[in-house]
Image 1: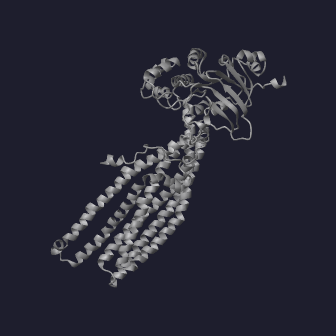
Image 2: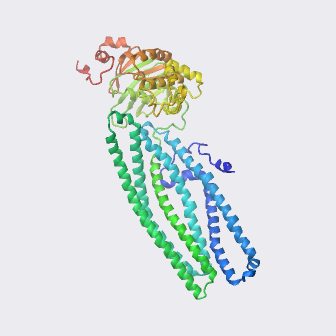
Image 3: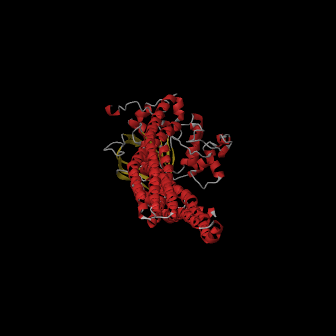
Length: 617
């Protein structure tokens, strides 16, 4: 039975219906409208629960009345129909109501809505630009996605199942008192006004304190994760104490924010205790006074006192729920800044999949400044023929990596256009664009998964035999067979650790090359592809790279000029502009920028720190 209800909300059954909006109310509505019927059912069952709970004090008063007017010997014989009705409400109706509420909350809303929010939030966040992730901690982004799902669901459930329940209970209780005698309403009206006034005073302060805690907590998580992510650097430089101070500052700040909030909780608890006592004493005094004057019967006194106790105890829970809701609002508000962040780089509505047939790449008068007024790349044009091998040469900051990032459309151009086989890459889907480009980067990052999954990332449908063949071409198969992780998984099943920390730099590079070999895209980018390899392994892999390049269009970046000297054409960049281009032999014969760079090489590397004096020659 439970499985049936648990299947009603499938969190991952669909992607996010558009971009989550900014604005707290609209953000809540975006997710809650997807499950609105279950919350409507929760509202109705809350009314039924309040009615059933109100019936219990009424039954107590009625029993007191029957006892006072019946002879013991004839009590059950005279009152059994009423007693059966009372038992039916207490033992059947009320449990059924609670069962329905439990199923709604525990089997449908809590697991389904919580992870629906997390899934759709992740679906949106993972499609953000590289800049979005570069400007924040990965740990903080992940924490916000996780906490937003819980906080939004919990606050919505609390409002409906607790706050709404108190309101319904108070209204039904007030109706019972008003029917007996209007004077009985005086204490509960005064109490209600005082209760609301206290919440109005204290809840905004708790909300502000909660928001401060949420920011402090995410900052603390970010600092802790930053230390863990860079643990090798921490240990290499023996900076444990520096990291302690870095995290201690965030812990102390978070502690101070918690202390500010908990002072308010102490005030709230004291105020609730005072209000609870005042309601019971006030209602009891009025009821007894009315009874002594014959205005109400004993059964009414026996009804209103437990009813007031029930309302006051529920109000205490509600007050703390309201503060919790306020805290959750703060968490949702913070999470909204990440989840509802507009995607800076998105596909056009009419974007089509890119189909690469030849692999011609053209940069047509492009300019890009990373949002600045000038610099990086200015009016650059470069045409690459299908199957041509291009080497990009230039010191750090010349614009080589930026050119590659623009081709991959990690950023949008500020002017000009980039085409592949004559198609503007701005008019195609980003997924299809990158699907047709393979890249091996200098900073190789692997997924915290198995070797098999990492290599197969280049072609998810690849067979095991294809994966092994790619690994052999990348000269990785032999060391893979000797791997064993901390859980005893061996070979291709061994996990590589976060970002591939279990492997050496050269091993990670060979896995990345195997992944690209398996992908076999028409356009290939090599960004210092063999920088982490020793000379012997590089020489072995170089032949594999030559086979991989085949008839592909290749763009290669390397500081070690000897590794790209054999390219069909070398393009020399200075300050985002092309200053020379030609084959290795042609450029040496010209005696210009490239010839000077080649002459200044030490061990085959481009010396970035040597000032180019060519303009003065």
